[in-house]
Length: 110
Image (cartoon, rainbow, N blue to C red; front, side, top):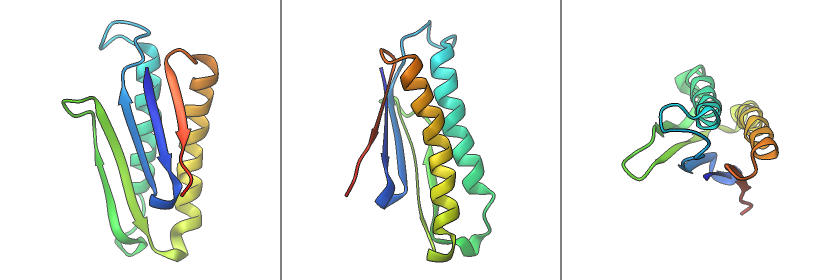
């Protein structure tokens, strides 16, 4: 199962695991999860340097199968960036609804 964890207070999204809906490298659910992840990374890269207190950091799956993206936007950009994360979360939520045995979305509050 892929566990997607979002921490809105930290602007951090973390993915861990594998959907196991197909062979590794040929798993359509993992491909969809990856697309949502790479979409948020690409969206955050579109902002100018002055948008950040701390620029976005991201890593694709490491040896433990963990991917993450986190950032620290300046207040005047925070609403836009929150919207970008919500856009990605809608995709993860749809995947969880359609493939509950393969995707788990957790939104952590403070």
